[in-house]
Image (cartoon, rainbow, N blue to C red; front, side, top):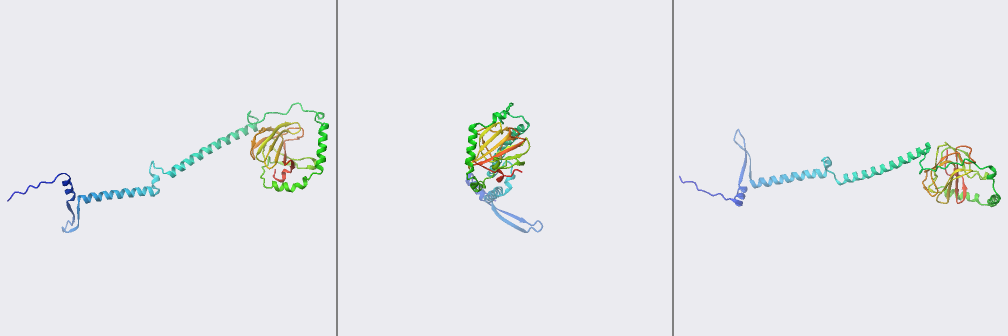
Length: 296
């Protein structure tokens, strides 16, 4: 018998490609009858390509599930742009609410100190009525004042104030006023008796609120009206608050509608108890405040 031929196996890339292309048969045989049930031809290169394709398909499926479904939110450390944007907005809102709460708390503390009598130097006027009040003889009107009053009364006798009343009501109908205080009106608007205001009785420590936004033009003390605050508004409106016990504002301050400007008091010669004397003027003419706001 002749010896077998010595075939040299190729080496290098050629040998690797040849081994990858070598064909194999995968056969499934019945163990009892040895009958062939299934057979499959394959080679190493096909198995390698199939494995790579399977891995890529599996990776693409996982990426699609993460990107296109809400499952990504449960992955630790993952945060999309929408989540970051919501977090940023929530942080800004929380910071704004903190600042607003801080300002509100300072306002409440200051108001509590004012109502309890512990007045900071920069929050309210600390002026007090004069201990020595002038006598009736000293308050009597002089000659020049009497002549001026007579001249004004003569001019007002022929004025057209009543004819302008309807037009003033139409002009002020769209203005939203804030009642300065809530209480009982003891004296109404009566031009015939030269009472150009309403007197509202309320608690002695009640805060007086500004009826409209404007600028304080007067914050002072007078012998007949006590502590007085006058605010100039737009549209030719002016509001006056008299007989206060404490003033919160000074001339030149800007105030908002509903902002506390004083405390109800009983100061001045013409005061007979804790109440607010409130006047409302439009273009130099006194108007009835009860026509535009409710005090009770």
